[in-house]
Length: 191
Image 1: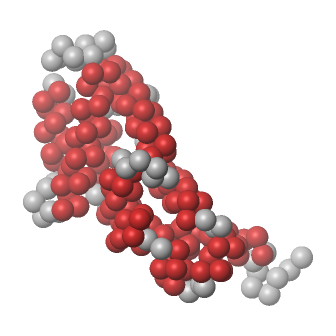
Image 2: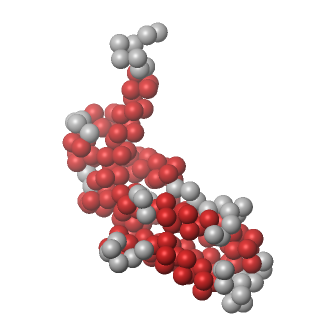
Image 3: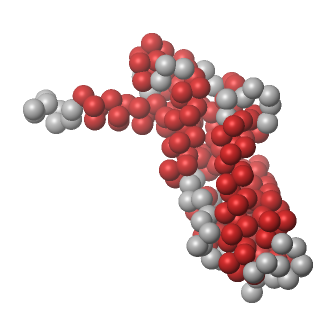
């Protein structure tokens, strides 16, 4: 079947969903999840709130879509990665401040009881720590030069990565994430 604009209703609907998710990313980055309203997201894409609810029946459903979209853009470290490739991930993150801002806002809010993203972040951080431990083990074996195990070092590595993002968002002129991360790798004993 040929459509006037060349797109099927399903394709048009998927494009609209993508627009809504991107708008939600922007609104959450500006206001946080609790401060973001479906009405604000709908307005940003030129829909009524009822029109938005056709695509995402609840604010939580929209949040899930935002988190899934963010994960598609995120190159989560895999065990087969080399530790030096993490610098490339940090450099890549510096090119997408809106995504980092949205992630940071949601992460900060998710620590409160009953937040709809709490389970997502709890699971995500468990997986990221496991991935980082595997990356560290591949580089250093069972002990880093400091004597710590990869499992003991992984949460510190994740904390440095996330902490650099917060500092960079607050003062991008003073914090060079990639350079600071390279300095951290020097502390680990990376050449």
